[in-house]
Image (cartoon, rainbow, N blue to C red; front, side, top):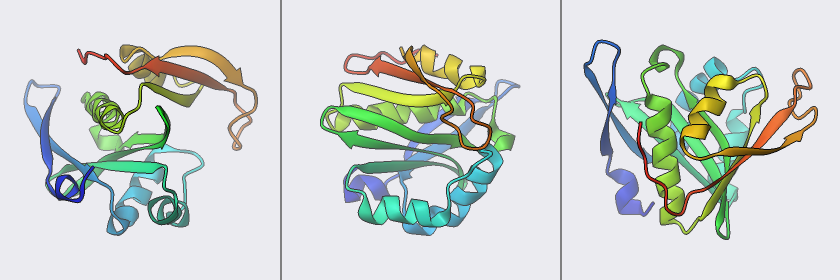
Length: 175
């Protein structure tokens, strides 16, 4: 995202259970977002990233690209990736607990893929816990397919990770 684009919030809509629409916006992650990002991390992961890890990503990793999803000036989700040549590797994607089940993960992943494509990515990869069928189902909607397993990938319980890849070059985004 350019600096001008980063400051502009791109509005998107997500459907609530009762058919209402929840307005959300997307923008580039900033250092001052880290305290809220850490809250989302702790709600989402058994081994959350630290504030220092995010600070390092934003300040020192030239391959890193992170976006936040906001509602009423509050971060309700975020996603990150590393872009190396024409491949994007999703590092993390998370939505606050109270906003789950509202198709916001779909919107967040859709925005991340659009960002990856705008930066020149043709392919995208990620690792996901073998037990996390909800996330796997989401990724499959975007054409991700399992291509292998990383044994003992997760440090908290040595759970295996599925390695998933997708060709994002010509993706269509249907819910």
